[in-house]
Amino acid sequence: MATQFDSASGLKKVRGLGSARSGVHHWWLQRVTAAGNFVLLVWFLASILSLPGLDHGSVTAWVAQPLVAVPLALLILTTFWHARLGVQVMIEDYVHTEGLKLLALIALNFFILATGAVALFSVLAIAFGA
Image (cartoon, rainbow, N blue to C red; front, side, top):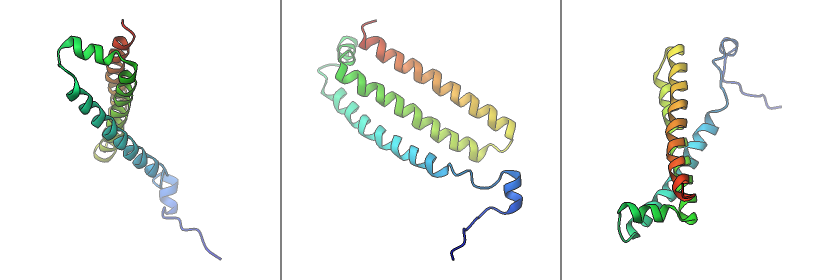
């Protein structure tokens, strides 16, 4: 009869210091967003380099195309999501004061949401001709 292995001691369980069981999911999300970023960034660079010119008119006409705006929006979403995941890990690992850690995570979420929203809005405004 096999026994279940439990790495957290009784005291760690009471204090909430055992496994949160979210590390693998977080690690996996970082890898998936990194892979998505790589593919979309290669597309972005190849597309930019194939434009006849990099003036404002050429780039806005390019972004206004649906087959460009959608992957560009996906690039924005995955890049900001990936950045949030990475900075969250740094905060959780290196900020040891719980109140400061919570404040930093809240500030991170607001910053990522605000800057990502501005970037996404910019692409959508061009794509929809606003």
